[in-house]
Length: 101
Image (cartoon, rainbow, N blue to C red; front, side, top):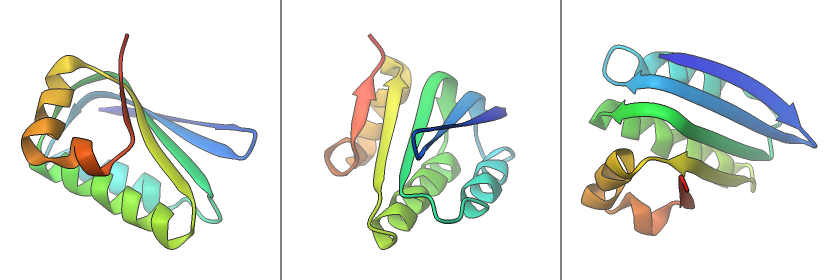
């Protein structure tokens, strides 16, 4: 998994590429925890191929962190395969998720 960070107009965008699984999810967790004073966070999953339950846990953790900071959180460019996982867990109803077009 590869994570690339970009800051644009006060919004932090994390581009996540590859597999977000048990081995790689702690890396995303570290990246999210290192974000201080972030009011808007976008996870760009355009190049994410797979997400496991531990990956979902990190996504939910990021969502909670943004809510505690009264910030905005969204996930963009989600593939249909990854979106299926969000739908199975019901997270598609709780999180702001935009499917890749």
